[in-house]
Length: 225
Ligand code: DX5
Image (cartoon, rainbow, N blue to C red; front, side):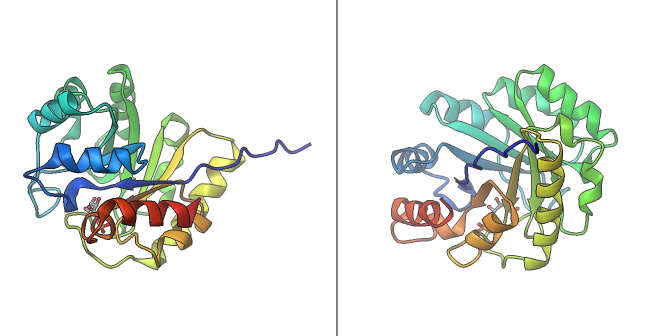
């Protein structure tokens, strides 16, 4: 008898890239009070992506301010050189990009040795097949639904095929891997992404760009529940 798949939990993950960088701890508290279980922090180095954001020191200070799960998305080159400082700073999840890793499996294992959850992300041009040798080692598989680097971009519906493929692969071998999408998630696209099989949906401008971010978060969360 085919094992019954557990009911998938769908969660919206607010992305702090669109939050007020002068009041990050306050904006995290607003999300936590609204029911968010985690927030994503986008780390950019100006090389892997044409933008620069934060380093481990910011995670360290935020860690002192909040108990929330810190999902840290590393859009940087040579991530293996920085996973130590980001883990030490208090990250709960470190997601590195497949395109930035010479040996993806060893980077994932290094992250896990640091006692942190491990995720792998792919850019829009990268096929889902690159996940095949790594999937069973991952806590999170992230399919970018925009070109990484900036918030407020349009969702790429052509990425949903990758989400469906990965959902099928994860279910076939009943892996405990979260399937995450990131970029252009809003009231129009969230349901499509959840129906395609995503369980973790990162949303930046649709939350923090709204007049009432807490209400916007709750509306998105309700839509995919
Ligand atoms: C983009 C980041 C995303 C971004 C999403 O490179 O990885 O997390 O903040 O923002 P929206 O939801 O506005 O596309």
